[in-house]
Structure formats: structure tokens, C-alpha cells
Length: 399
Ligand SMILES: Cc1cc2nc3c(=O)[nH]c(=O)nc-3n(C[C@H](O)[C@H](O)[C@H](O)COP(=O)(O)OP(=O)(O)OC[C@H]3O[C@@H](n4cnc5c(N)ncnc54)[C@H](O)[C@@H]3O)c2cc1C
Image 1 (cartoon, rainbow, N blue to C red):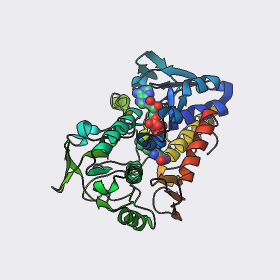
Image 2 (image 1 turned 120 degrees about the vertical axis):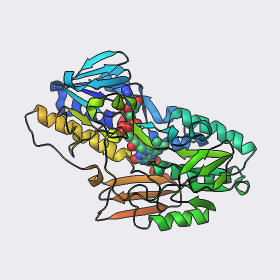
Image 3 (image 1 turned 180 degrees about the horizontal axis):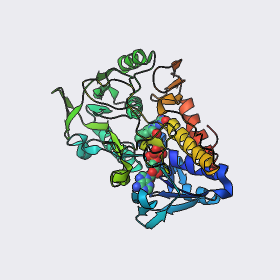
Image 4 (image 1 turned 90 degrees about the vertical axis):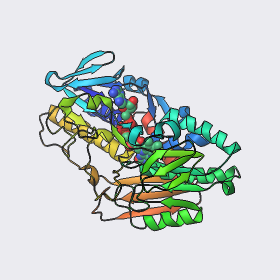
């Protein structure tokens, strides 16, 4: 049985390693990725402050995969032709018996004019390094700052983390009193996070905003970004010398170039709770590529739900398990809806942190807690070290 995995970062790397570990010789596994580097994306928020270099949070995954018996093709997947079990890539065509799509997101910078030109984005190595340069320049001539998430965004957590890191950095640079700091978000309330909040979360975030003198606007979208200001959908104009925004994520071009995948308007793959394509039994999706239905009623300004690292890895594991089961003639598949996966997340709040734990990501939940730690961000640092340690060794079965 030959399984081709497209995209090999969180979900895809886990799926490929688990397939090989469980399937051994009976499974031929091929990963196609345009990048040879594994990147621990959650630590990108520290790159702009020089707390991490890109090399600290990445490693050569092609070498790891080959060592584990997985073939690696360094190419961009262009489209899939399910009728022929064929993937077209920038380096030729590849056939498959089973296909796993784990291509993550494409950033929709054009959600409002001026974002690409004037707002910074920390979610890519290039964006994080450019943000570092911009902050160095800003330090010499400080002024108002706007940080936030745009309409339709779903990855609010990372933007909150960056906000509190900037606030801390401004104090460390001794320029805090020269800066009016604004947080803007489409969320209906602070700490909604696209999961309808966590008990106590809104109160905690409100007290952080008060304690650190951060102005905030909820239920706002971005109309346009200019070099020196951000215009909101409410008509309000916020002056800004430095702007960082989290735009929405959509599916990558490979998905939208493949009409037979029947992707949603946003470019996500419709799957069952076993992460199998609803129309193609030998196509699977894992991680951000999966279509997840919104767990809440949207407010005035649309926004989306988060697709974080833990469920991305979990869906990679479920897909690997199901392909193995089918290849051994077992048609009873493992199923776990995205929203039923436990919520496990550490939000860095600028050398302090909030640990978020819940039995399920989406409501109804039996328990959900936010545990603040104002002493330091030990848990986030530990989590990074642990994740890099286990991933570099290919220990994909560990949580
Ligand atoms: C700034 C930031 C901070 C975050 N912080 C956290 C956090 O603290 N905790 C948390 O749980 N989550 C966090 N997340 C979310 C987390 O990064 C994602 O959940 C995770 O990366 C999703 O994994 P994935 O495998 O689906 O996609 P990705 O990790 O994006 O991987 C996609 C892979 O597919 C490859 N690819 C894409 N298109 C193609 C193609 N056409 N051909 C070949 N290869 C392709 C890419 O090169 C990449 O290797 C954060 C995200 C951001 C942006």
C-alpha cells in the first residue's frame, strides 16, 4: 500500500511517521513538501524580539523522514486528479493508493486593502524577521501601535500572545509611556478565541488589558490599513506607527486548484469524523486543511475557530490509524470530531502565561480551566523544548 502525504509539518509529519511506525514494511510512505524544514510555528511569536532565531525552532525533516524509511520529495503539489489516483507536483507526477492532505493554511492578506503593504504578520519566518527589523526601527521613533486580528480570522491566540509580548518589550526598551497600545478583534468578547470562550477567560483578559493599559475594541473589522493609521469598519481611525494583524487563513492553492476535492469556499476539505474525504474513500485530510464547522453563532463581524497544533497532530494520528486499519481489512474506523478533541494550549502573555485545558475544544464541555502563571512563561518554553525533542527523534506516538 502506497500512501502519499502532502505537507509534512505538524499534521503531515505525524501522519507519515505514524503510518511507517505502525505499518512497517507493508506501508510505503511518501511525503511531498515544498519545504525541507520542520518549523515549530508557535515559537515564531518570539522571533521579532530576538528571543528565538529561526534555526532554534526548525530542523531538517527530510533527513529525519528518510532515516525512518519514508521517501521525501521536495516539491510543491500543484493539483490532484482523484480519478487517476495521481498528484501533479512541480517535479513530476506521483501515484498513490491513499492520499493524505496536510497542507496547512494560506494567509488571506487581501481581506482588506493595505494589509499586505503596511501591516506586519508574524506567522512565517520571513514575516517574523521583517517584524524584528520594523520593531528595531520603531524603537528609535516610537508612537501608537495597533495589534489584532482581522474579520474572518481564526488564529486569535497568536495575536494575543504577540500583543502581550510587545507590551513587555516596550517596557524593557523603556519606551512604554510613549506608546498608545491598541488591540482590535472581531471577537464578540475578549478571549472568545473562536471557541465561545473559556470560563473566567474574559474577566482575566479584561484585567490584563487594564493592568497593562491596553485599549481594546471588540467586534470590529479592518476597513483599510495605511502607513500611519488603521481604519476600522466602525469608522474609527486609529493612528499607528507599527501595525501587526492576523488575517484569516484559507486553503492552499493545491486544494483550490483541485475541483474534484469539493473544497469549501474557504478551501478546506470536507471529511468525516474519521478524517476521510466525504466523496473519495482513499483521500484523507489532517490539520488545518480539514473543514471544521463553526462551534458558535457569529456576531456582527465574522470570525472563525482556531485550528491549533494539538488537534492537528491528533488528526494526523487518526488518519494514520485508519489507513492502517483499512489496509488490514478492518473497516471499523477511529472517529473523533475536531471539537471533541481535548483543548491543550499555553498562551504566552509576555514572560508570563495562561495554561488553557479543557476536556473538549468546543462546548458543551465537562471542564475547562485557564490557569494564569504571572511568574514566567516556563510552561510555554518547556512545551517548545519537549516538542522539538520528540519531533527531532521522530517519536510521533508521544502526545
Ligand atoms: C504565529 C502562530 C502561532 C501559533 N501558536 C500556536 C500555539 O501556541 N499553540 C498551538 O497549538 N498552535 C499554534 N498555532 C497553530 C499551529 O501552528 C497550527 O495548528 C499547525 O501548524 C497546523 O499544522 P498543519 O500541519 O495543519 O499545517 P502547517 O504546520 O502549516 O504545515 C503545512 C505544511 O504543508 C506544506 N505545504 C503547503 N502547501 C503545499 C503544497 N502545495 N505542496 C507541498 N507542500 C505544501 C508546508 O510547507 C508545510 O510544511 C500558531 C500558528 C501561528 C501562525
